[in-house]
Image (cartoon, rainbow over the protein chains, first blue to last red):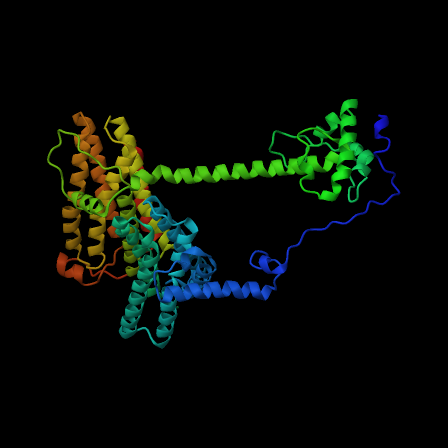
Length: 217
Length: 340
């Protein structure tokens, strides 16, 4: 192949050149290239988003911020803290710890998945992770109730404390259900809202019941 | 040779490398770059080489215009040293596309599986309420096959409600589960009953030539749990044995009668009707009995007054579940084995 003779280059000529990547100006790319920002900015942005969602849960209004930018950080933190606080409440002190934590964790996530599937099967327009996000964030009042219950139990475990705990847990349970209903029921056809609300009611009822019957050892 | 192009310099080592690299390509699924492609056409024909030479000269000229899509000019033909980079890039892109497509189709089929269940959840709240009330009313007309709604929302919600009630009962009776969790036991019991007994009854219905589908059986049995829910809700909180027996007979009996009547209307033949209905009635009533006695709280003193002074006073003990449930499970398994 005589035509190839001048195609190959000898080994001692270094191959050199420059690779230039066209970099646009910094300002329009600020929103899209977050890879170069300092870690503090990233964390603060995520924390602010999570905090905003907590505020939305505390004062449930019909806003779409919770739905639009869903994230699962808040639910994870709430779930882990609730599971940690519910630990050590079993009657038999030999086998506390392990099953309790896993139990609560699995109940919350499995329950949320079932409710999401149910709402999707009933013709909901909300996506899987958006629904998980809302249900997870609405566990927050119940976590607050758990904190209050633990503090009340520190003071004593009599009938009065039981009544106080019952009132607190009941109020928080109603708040959780109302908050999640405010977000989730809008995505359903109007005549089927009750069908979606009932499993949410049952889900938060089970969690409230676990909180209420918690007795520290 | 234009700047920034190391392709031609790799002619010798590139080809030698291709010989030694053994990259068996098994279909499109391997993650290994297929070097044999390049091997086949390397140095194939004079015309190819000439054409390649020509293209490279053209490429030198349009190097100033940028490197936009250098790999996209070639379409499937080997261009030797210069084409090595383009071929590689294209193969990688190809494989990534195939992997992505595979993942997308798998995800889609998973989503489509949910859609299979969609028609069974197509209900209105009024329909659910009506069916709940109907599940306690036995039908009178058994000569005409009764309609069973093949719906899964109501039964599923009833099973979950039963789980919640069971949990409440277990906690108030201070049940200790040694190898497991309360929640796991409750879910396992309720779902096991619903799915297991439905499957068993469907199998029996198949043997006895009854006109019923699996979804209808699930729905029928699920709605029958409504009676269980009511009974347990009341008797876990009010602990009178006689109250429980009354509820067991009346409420349990009504829901059993309804299920039995519907099944009878869909079966022909006396023996078959007897087998089906006997089994269903027995399992349904025994399940309620089991749920009550395995997890209820015995209040000392009340039994004395109800059942006469001859009975020794009951102690309130925390039930050790494995002993009781093992015994019940063993007997149940034996009876099922005997009937089969």
